[in-house]
Length: 252
Image (cartoon, rainbow, N blue to C red; front, side):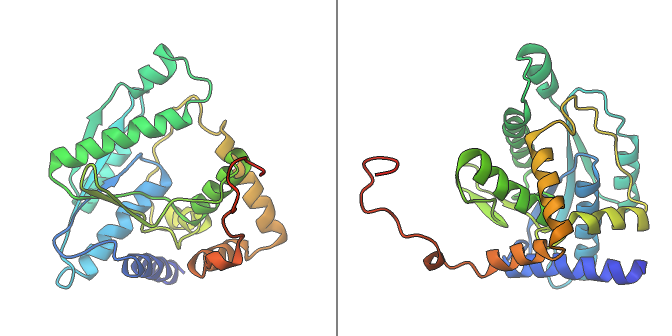
């Protein structure tokens, strides 16, 4: 069972990397690791992918953790990176202090994401690396889509690969074909450690609401995630409305 699931997982990651040319020979890839299940599993499988394609696609891996000053015990993450023989940089930040002590944010997620994004990109540049790998999986793709639709009136989600011209960095998401349930199963099977998240806003966000919405949809329509992925891969703009000819008013 373990080998079969591991093989399926690696196949999905390999396909995503290949379909969107996420990793090329000579790349230097930073993996943003929070210590949570998703990012640690991503590190595990990118390391496996690197060893499998060492001669064909040689590239470097480096883990980066942003210490938000919330008192997380990083011992499991340090031991995990040592086990994989992957260097780990722990970047201390004052993000936690800014969010909860100075600004006293009641809905901190958007600002937190922006601050963490900037800190991770800056650290990647300091290390001399050119790509950032994030552990967003298929459930995250769907949740982001529904959050945009419900809260902002937009039909969009994040891309598998994004080039940032201001920093000359490329952000890649090798887990876009993987579901959260698969990650959870692999964490148990491969004994991947998970660091407790001490964030006061953990599990109390709008994303958590949308997560429950997606889960409820999946109970009624078990293949909803794969159908959503298929719709993204086969998207045709002609199937949606054309742009308005009269753009003077919102509903004009």
